[in-house]
Length: 439
Image (tube, rainbow, N blue to C red):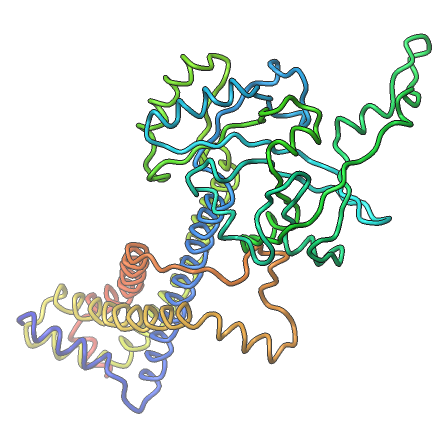
Protein backbone atom coordinates (compact mmCIF):
# COMPACT_ATOMS: atom_id res chain seq x y z
CA UNK A 1 0.00 0.00 0.00
CA UNK A 2 1.46 3.35 -1.02
CA UNK A 3 1.64 6.46 1.11
CA UNK A 4 -1.25 8.24 -0.66
CA UNK A 5 -3.54 5.30 0.07
CA UNK A 6 -2.53 5.43 3.73
CA UNK A 7 -3.32 9.15 3.84
CA UNK A 8 -6.68 8.51 2.17
CA UNK A 9 -7.62 5.91 4.79
CA UNK A 10 -6.44 8.11 7.66
CA UNK A 11 -8.46 11.05 6.35
CA UNK A 12 -11.50 8.81 5.77
CA UNK A 13 -11.40 7.72 9.43
CA UNK A 14 -10.83 11.30 10.55
CA UNK A 15 -13.40 13.13 8.41
CA UNK A 16 -16.50 13.92 10.50
CA UNK A 17 -19.67 11.99 9.69
CA UNK A 18 -22.96 11.67 11.48
CA UNK A 19 -21.93 9.24 14.17
CA UNK A 20 -20.52 9.29 17.69
CA UNK A 21 -16.91 8.96 16.59
CA UNK A 22 -17.14 12.10 14.47
CA UNK A 23 -18.47 14.11 17.40
CA UNK A 24 -15.68 12.87 19.65
CA UNK A 25 -13.11 13.64 16.95
CA UNK A 26 -14.49 17.16 16.64
CA UNK A 27 -14.27 17.58 20.42
CA UNK A 28 -10.62 16.46 20.29
CA UNK A 29 -9.84 19.04 17.60
CA UNK A 30 -11.58 21.77 19.60
CA UNK A 31 -9.68 20.71 22.74
CA UNK A 32 -6.35 21.00 20.93
CA UNK A 33 -7.36 24.38 19.48
CA UNK A 34 -8.33 25.78 22.86
CA UNK A 35 -5.17 24.46 24.50
CA UNK A 36 -2.93 25.96 21.80
CA UNK A 37 -4.86 29.26 21.85
CA UNK A 38 -4.57 29.60 25.63
CA UNK A 39 -0.86 28.81 25.46
CA UNK A 40 -0.26 31.38 22.71
CA UNK A 41 -2.29 34.11 24.47
CA UNK A 42 -0.59 33.63 27.84
CA UNK A 43 2.93 33.49 26.36
CA UNK A 44 2.16 36.54 24.19
CA UNK A 45 0.95 38.49 27.23
CA UNK A 46 4.01 37.46 29.26
CA UNK A 47 6.30 38.46 26.38
CA UNK A 48 4.45 41.74 25.86
CA UNK A 49 4.51 42.48 29.57
CA UNK A 50 8.27 41.85 29.72
CA UNK A 51 8.97 43.94 26.60
CA UNK A 52 6.69 46.76 27.77
CA UNK A 53 8.33 46.75 31.18
CA UNK A 54 11.79 46.92 29.58
CA UNK A 55 10.66 49.86 27.45
CA UNK A 56 9.29 51.67 30.49
CA UNK A 57 12.42 50.93 32.51
CA UNK A 58 14.52 52.45 29.73
CA UNK A 59 12.08 55.33 29.24
CA UNK A 60 11.98 56.27 32.93
CA UNK A 61 15.61 55.43 33.60
CA UNK A 62 18.94 55.14 31.84
CA UNK A 63 20.87 52.44 30.01
CA UNK A 64 23.26 52.28 32.95
CA UNK A 65 24.71 54.15 35.90
CA UNK A 66 28.07 55.04 37.38
CA UNK A 67 28.00 54.89 41.19
CA UNK A 68 30.21 55.19 44.23
CA UNK A 69 30.35 52.60 47.02
CA UNK A 70 29.05 53.47 50.49
CA UNK A 71 32.45 54.07 52.10
CA UNK A 72 33.07 57.13 49.90
CA UNK A 73 30.17 59.20 51.22
CA UNK A 74 30.78 62.32 53.15
CA UNK A 75 27.22 63.61 53.14
CA UNK A 76 24.70 61.05 51.96
CA UNK A 77 21.01 61.90 51.54
CA UNK A 78 19.96 58.40 50.51
CA UNK A 79 21.83 55.97 52.69
CA UNK A 80 22.41 53.56 49.80
CA UNK A 81 24.11 55.54 47.04
CA UNK A 82 27.34 57.55 46.90
CA UNK A 83 27.65 61.25 46.29
CA UNK A 84 29.84 62.54 43.46
CA UNK A 85 31.35 65.99 43.75
CA UNK A 86 30.87 68.31 40.80
CA UNK A 87 34.37 67.56 39.51
CA UNK A 88 33.84 63.79 39.81
CA UNK A 89 30.48 64.00 38.06
CA UNK A 90 32.01 65.94 35.16
CA UNK A 91 34.87 63.43 34.83
CA UNK A 92 32.44 60.51 34.81
CA UNK A 93 30.21 62.17 32.21
CA UNK A 94 33.22 62.97 30.01
CA UNK A 95 34.28 59.30 30.15
CA UNK A 96 30.88 58.31 28.74
CA UNK A 97 30.90 60.97 26.04
CA UNK A 98 34.38 59.95 24.86
CA UNK A 99 32.87 56.59 23.93
CA UNK A 100 30.00 58.15 21.99
CA UNK A 101 27.31 57.94 24.69
CA UNK A 102 25.30 60.57 26.53
CA UNK A 103 25.61 61.17 30.28
CA UNK A 104 23.73 63.11 32.93
CA UNK A 105 24.64 63.60 36.62
CA UNK A 106 21.52 62.90 38.67
CA UNK A 107 20.55 63.23 42.32
CA UNK A 108 17.85 60.79 43.47
CA UNK A 109 16.59 60.74 47.04
CA UNK A 110 13.48 60.13 49.13
CA UNK A 111 11.72 63.17 50.59
CA UNK A 112 8.74 63.87 52.80
CA UNK A 113 6.09 65.77 50.85
CA UNK A 114 3.86 68.14 52.82
CA UNK A 115 0.68 69.59 51.35
CA UNK A 116 -1.21 71.62 53.94
CA UNK A 117 -1.59 69.18 56.87
CA UNK A 118 -0.96 66.03 54.81
CA UNK A 119 2.40 64.24 54.72
CA UNK A 120 3.51 61.47 52.37
CA UNK A 121 6.91 59.95 51.54
CA UNK A 122 7.90 60.45 47.89
CA UNK A 123 11.12 60.71 45.89
CA UNK A 124 12.73 63.43 43.82
CA UNK A 125 14.99 63.24 40.80
CA UNK A 126 17.17 66.32 40.48
CA UNK A 127 18.87 66.82 37.12
CA UNK A 128 19.45 69.17 34.22
CA UNK A 129 17.67 67.34 31.34
CA UNK A 130 19.07 69.70 28.71
CA UNK A 131 22.52 68.14 29.28
CA UNK A 132 21.61 64.53 28.36
CA UNK A 133 21.05 64.95 24.62
CA UNK A 134 17.29 64.44 25.02
CA UNK A 135 17.65 60.84 26.17
CA UNK A 136 15.73 61.30 29.41
CA UNK A 137 12.54 62.27 27.51
CA UNK A 138 11.24 64.40 30.35
CA UNK A 139 10.09 67.09 27.92
CA UNK A 140 7.97 64.48 26.07
CA UNK A 141 6.37 63.30 29.34
CA UNK A 142 5.10 66.77 30.34
CA UNK A 143 1.29 66.82 30.17
CA UNK A 144 0.63 70.39 31.30
CA UNK A 145 2.65 73.44 32.26
CA UNK A 146 6.34 73.62 31.41
CA UNK A 147 9.81 72.45 32.39
CA UNK A 148 11.35 74.00 35.54
CA UNK A 149 13.36 77.13 34.70
CA UNK A 150 13.57 79.31 37.80
CA UNK A 151 14.78 78.34 41.25
CA UNK A 152 12.48 76.27 43.48
CA UNK A 153 10.25 75.10 40.64
CA UNK A 154 9.20 71.46 40.47
CA UNK A 155 7.51 69.00 38.11
CA UNK A 156 4.91 66.82 39.83
CA UNK A 157 3.39 63.66 38.38
CA UNK A 158 -0.32 63.43 37.56
CA UNK A 159 -1.02 60.74 40.22
CA UNK A 160 0.51 62.96 42.93
CA UNK A 161 -1.48 65.94 41.67
CA UNK A 162 -4.67 63.88 41.93
CA UNK A 163 -3.73 62.42 45.30
CA UNK A 164 -3.33 65.85 46.91
CA UNK A 165 -5.78 67.73 44.65
CA UNK A 166 -3.08 70.11 43.46
CA UNK A 167 -3.08 72.55 40.56
CA UNK A 168 -0.41 74.31 38.53
CA UNK A 169 1.09 77.17 40.52
CA UNK A 170 0.35 75.60 43.91
CA UNK A 171 3.12 75.50 46.49
CA UNK A 172 4.33 72.37 48.29
CA UNK A 173 6.82 71.78 51.10
CA UNK A 174 9.60 69.19 50.96
CA UNK A 175 11.45 67.81 54.00
CA UNK A 176 14.82 66.21 53.26
CA UNK A 177 16.01 63.18 55.32
CA UNK A 178 19.27 64.91 56.20
CA UNK A 179 17.43 67.96 57.59
CA UNK A 180 14.96 65.82 59.54
CA UNK A 181 17.85 63.81 60.99
CA UNK A 182 19.31 67.00 62.48
CA UNK A 183 16.15 67.58 64.52
CA UNK A 184 17.37 65.03 67.08
CA UNK A 185 20.77 64.32 68.60
CA UNK A 186 22.26 61.78 70.96
CA UNK A 187 23.16 62.89 74.48
CA UNK A 188 26.79 61.74 74.98
CA UNK A 189 26.30 61.58 78.76
CA UNK A 190 23.13 59.46 78.95
CA UNK A 191 23.11 57.86 75.48
CA UNK A 192 19.52 58.97 74.97
CA UNK A 193 18.17 60.92 72.04
CA UNK A 194 16.91 64.44 72.54
CA UNK A 195 15.76 67.42 70.51
CA UNK A 196 18.63 69.11 68.76
CA UNK A 197 19.58 72.59 69.84
CA UNK A 198 19.11 73.74 66.24
CA UNK A 199 15.67 72.15 65.92
CA UNK A 200 13.85 75.47 66.26
CA UNK A 201 15.65 76.83 63.19
CA UNK A 202 14.64 74.07 60.77
CA UNK A 203 12.25 74.96 57.96
CA UNK A 204 11.20 72.81 55.00
CA UNK A 205 11.82 74.13 51.51
CA UNK A 206 8.97 75.53 49.46
CA UNK A 207 8.55 74.67 45.74
CA UNK A 208 6.14 75.94 43.09
CA UNK A 209 4.52 73.42 40.73
CA UNK A 210 5.43 74.53 37.20
CA UNK A 211 4.15 71.47 35.32
CA UNK A 212 2.83 67.93 35.47
CA UNK A 213 4.18 64.79 33.77
CA UNK A 214 3.33 61.15 33.22
CA UNK A 215 5.41 58.30 31.77
CA UNK A 216 2.34 56.01 31.79
CA UNK A 217 4.08 53.77 34.31
CA UNK A 218 1.98 54.02 37.43
CA UNK A 219 4.46 52.68 39.99
CA UNK A 220 7.03 55.25 38.81
CA UNK A 221 4.65 58.19 38.39
CA UNK A 222 2.95 57.84 41.77
CA UNK A 223 6.15 58.51 43.73
CA UNK A 224 8.39 60.74 41.61
CA UNK A 225 8.90 64.50 41.25
CA UNK A 226 11.54 66.32 39.18
CA UNK A 227 13.55 69.42 40.00
CA UNK A 228 16.75 71.14 38.89
CA UNK A 229 20.04 69.71 40.14
CA UNK A 230 20.98 72.94 41.97
CA UNK A 231 17.66 72.88 43.83
CA UNK A 232 18.22 69.24 44.74
CA UNK A 233 21.70 69.93 46.09
CA UNK A 234 20.36 72.80 48.13
CA UNK A 235 17.45 70.71 49.46
CA UNK A 236 19.79 67.93 50.63
CA UNK A 237 22.53 70.25 51.90
CA UNK A 238 25.09 69.15 49.31
CA UNK A 239 27.72 71.16 47.47
CA UNK A 240 26.59 72.59 44.11
CA UNK A 241 26.91 70.11 41.25
CA UNK A 242 26.80 67.03 43.51
CA UNK A 243 25.05 63.88 42.25
CA UNK A 244 24.29 60.42 43.59
CA UNK A 245 24.84 58.75 40.20
CA UNK A 246 25.84 59.44 36.64
CA UNK A 247 23.22 58.08 34.24
CA UNK A 248 24.35 57.21 30.73
CA UNK A 249 22.76 56.17 27.44
CA UNK A 250 24.04 54.24 24.41
CA UNK A 251 22.74 53.71 20.88
CA UNK A 252 21.62 50.12 21.58
CA UNK A 253 20.76 49.22 25.20
CA UNK A 254 20.17 45.57 24.28
CA UNK A 255 23.68 45.06 22.84
CA UNK A 256 26.02 47.13 24.98
CA UNK A 257 28.54 44.60 26.33
CA UNK A 258 31.46 46.06 24.35
CA UNK A 259 30.48 49.60 25.39
CA UNK A 260 30.33 48.59 29.07
CA UNK A 261 33.74 46.95 28.91
CA UNK A 262 35.30 50.08 27.39
CA UNK A 263 33.44 52.34 29.85
CA UNK A 264 34.66 50.37 32.86
CA UNK A 265 38.22 50.92 31.66
CA UNK A 266 37.60 54.65 31.21
CA UNK A 267 35.94 54.95 34.62
CA UNK A 268 38.76 52.99 36.28
CA UNK A 269 41.24 55.62 35.16
CA UNK A 270 39.03 58.69 35.71
CA UNK A 271 37.24 57.56 38.92
CA UNK A 272 39.06 54.55 40.39
CA UNK A 273 36.58 54.20 43.27
CA UNK A 274 33.46 54.18 41.05
CA UNK A 275 31.75 51.20 39.42
CA UNK A 276 29.46 50.76 36.39
CA UNK A 277 26.07 49.01 36.31
CA UNK A 278 23.96 48.28 33.24
CA UNK A 279 20.17 48.64 33.22
CA UNK A 280 19.87 44.85 33.25
CA UNK A 281 21.97 44.68 36.43
CA UNK A 282 19.97 47.47 38.03
CA UNK A 283 16.71 45.61 37.30
CA UNK A 284 18.06 42.06 37.41
CA UNK A 285 15.57 40.74 39.94
CA UNK A 286 12.41 41.77 38.18
CA UNK A 287 13.76 40.62 34.79
CA UNK A 288 14.73 37.23 36.23
CA UNK A 289 11.33 36.84 37.89
CA UNK A 290 9.54 37.60 34.62
CA UNK A 291 11.72 35.09 32.77
CA UNK A 292 11.01 32.36 35.33
CA UNK A 293 7.27 33.14 35.29
CA UNK A 294 7.14 32.87 31.49
CA UNK A 295 8.92 29.50 31.52
CA UNK A 296 6.71 28.18 34.33
CA UNK A 297 3.53 29.32 32.58
CA UNK A 298 4.69 27.62 29.39
CA UNK A 299 5.45 24.40 31.26
CA UNK A 300 2.12 24.36 33.11
CA UNK A 301 -0.03 25.27 30.13
CA UNK A 302 1.50 22.51 28.00
CA UNK A 303 -0.54 20.18 30.20
CA UNK A 304 -3.70 21.62 28.60
CA UNK A 305 -2.50 20.32 25.24
CA UNK A 306 -1.49 17.06 26.93
CA UNK A 307 -5.06 16.60 28.17
CA UNK A 308 -6.28 17.13 24.61
CA UNK A 309 -3.81 14.45 23.48
CA UNK A 310 -5.39 12.00 25.95
CA UNK A 311 -8.76 12.82 24.40
CA UNK A 312 -7.29 11.81 21.04
CA UNK A 313 -6.18 8.50 22.57
CA UNK A 314 -9.74 7.85 23.77
CA UNK A 315 -11.18 8.82 20.39
CA UNK A 316 -8.88 6.53 18.42
CA UNK A 317 -9.41 3.61 20.76
CA UNK A 318 -13.12 3.96 20.00
CA UNK A 319 -12.31 4.18 16.30
CA UNK A 320 -10.19 1.03 16.42
CA UNK A 321 -12.98 -0.89 18.12
CA UNK A 322 -15.55 0.26 15.55
CA UNK A 323 -13.20 -0.31 12.61
CA UNK A 324 -12.03 -3.77 13.68
CA UNK A 325 -13.65 -5.42 10.65
CA UNK A 326 -12.07 -2.94 8.22
CA UNK A 327 -8.68 -3.38 9.85
CA UNK A 328 -9.04 -7.15 9.49
CA UNK A 329 -9.90 -6.76 5.78
CA UNK A 330 -6.91 -4.48 5.23
CA UNK A 331 -4.51 -6.93 6.85
CA UNK A 332 -6.03 -9.88 4.98
CA UNK A 333 -5.47 -7.99 1.72
CA UNK A 334 -1.76 -7.63 2.49
CA UNK A 335 -1.49 -4.48 4.58
CA UNK A 336 1.29 -4.89 7.10
CA UNK A 337 1.06 -4.02 10.77
CA UNK A 338 3.37 -1.08 10.12
CA UNK A 339 0.95 0.29 7.49
CA UNK A 340 -1.97 0.06 9.93
CA UNK A 341 0.19 1.73 12.60
CA UNK A 342 0.95 4.64 10.26
CA UNK A 343 -2.71 5.06 9.27
CA UNK A 344 -3.81 5.66 12.85
CA UNK A 345 -0.75 7.75 13.70
CA UNK A 346 -1.64 9.97 10.74
CA UNK A 347 -5.13 10.33 12.14
CA UNK A 348 -3.65 11.72 15.34
CA UNK A 349 -1.37 13.91 13.19
CA UNK A 350 -4.39 15.31 11.33
CA UNK A 351 -6.07 16.17 14.65
CA UNK A 352 -2.88 17.88 15.81
CA UNK A 353 -2.36 19.89 12.62
CA UNK A 354 -5.97 21.05 12.25
CA UNK A 355 -6.38 21.71 15.98
CA UNK A 356 -3.08 23.61 16.15
CA UNK A 357 -3.96 25.70 13.09
CA UNK A 358 -7.30 26.61 14.67
CA UNK A 359 -5.58 27.38 17.97
CA UNK A 360 -3.02 29.67 16.31
CA UNK A 361 -5.80 31.58 14.54
CA UNK A 362 -7.89 31.83 17.70
CA UNK A 363 -4.90 32.90 19.80
CA UNK A 364 -3.96 35.58 17.27
CA UNK A 365 -7.52 36.93 17.26
CA UNK A 366 -7.65 37.10 21.07
CA UNK A 367 -4.30 38.92 21.22
CA UNK A 368 -5.29 41.32 18.43
CA UNK A 369 -8.64 42.22 20.03
CA UNK A 370 -7.60 41.85 23.68
CA UNK A 371 -8.52 45.43 24.64
CA UNK A 372 -12.00 45.09 23.13
CA UNK A 373 -12.42 41.78 24.97
CA UNK A 374 -11.38 43.46 28.23
CA UNK A 375 -13.81 46.31 27.56
CA UNK A 376 -16.64 43.81 27.01
CA UNK A 377 -15.72 41.94 30.20
CA UNK A 378 -15.62 45.25 32.07
CA UNK A 379 -19.06 46.15 30.69
CA UNK A 380 -20.71 42.85 31.66
CA UNK A 381 -18.96 42.41 35.02
CA UNK A 382 -19.01 46.05 36.09
CA UNK A 383 -15.43 45.74 37.38
CA UNK A 384 -12.06 46.97 36.16
CA UNK A 385 -10.36 43.88 34.71
CA UNK A 386 -6.89 45.42 34.30
CA UNK A 387 -6.44 48.16 36.95
CA UNK A 388 -3.26 50.14 36.34
CA UNK A 389 -2.75 50.57 40.10
CA UNK A 390 -2.03 46.82 40.32
CA UNK A 391 -0.54 45.97 36.93
CA UNK A 392 1.32 49.29 36.54
CA UNK A 393 0.40 49.80 32.86
CA UNK A 394 -2.49 51.61 31.18
CA UNK A 395 -3.25 48.72 28.80
CA UNK A 396 -2.74 44.98 28.60
CA UNK A 397 0.55 44.48 26.73
CA UNK A 398 0.96 41.49 24.42
CA UNK A 399 3.33 40.51 21.62
CA UNK A 400 3.30 37.32 19.60
CA UNK A 401 6.77 35.94 18.92
CA UNK A 402 6.41 33.61 15.98
CA UNK A 403 9.33 31.48 17.08
CA UNK A 404 7.36 30.78 20.29
CA UNK A 405 4.31 29.96 18.17
CA UNK A 406 6.40 27.53 16.12
CA UNK A 407 7.62 25.78 19.29
CA UNK A 408 4.08 25.60 20.68
CA UNK A 409 2.76 24.22 17.37
CA UNK A 410 5.46 21.56 17.15
CA UNK A 411 4.83 20.47 20.74
CA UNK A 412 1.05 20.33 20.16
CA UNK A 413 1.36 18.28 16.95
CA UNK A 414 3.93 15.98 18.57
CA UNK A 415 1.73 15.37 21.64
CA UNK A 416 -1.30 14.66 19.46
CA UNK A 417 0.68 12.20 17.36
CA UNK A 418 2.08 10.51 20.48
CA UNK A 419 -1.46 10.37 21.87
CA UNK A 420 -2.43 8.27 18.84
CA UNK A 421 0.40 5.78 19.44
CA UNK A 422 -1.42 3.47 21.89
CA UNK A 423 -4.54 2.89 19.76
CA UNK A 424 -2.34 2.66 16.64
CA UNK A 425 -0.30 -0.14 18.25
CA UNK A 426 -3.53 -1.87 19.28
CA UNK A 427 -4.81 -1.70 15.71
CA UNK A 428 -1.50 -2.94 14.29
CA UNK A 429 -1.57 -5.99 16.57
CA UNK A 430 -5.05 -7.12 15.56
CA UNK A 431 -5.17 -10.64 14.18
CA UNK A 432 -7.10 -10.42 10.85
CA UNK A 433 -8.63 -13.90 11.28
CA UNK A 434 -10.01 -13.08 14.72
CA UNK A 435 -11.10 -9.62 13.61
CA UNK A 436 -13.14 -11.02 10.72
CA UNK A 437 -14.50 -13.98 12.76
CA UNK A 438 -15.97 -11.85 15.55
CA UNK A 439 -17.03 -8.89 13.46
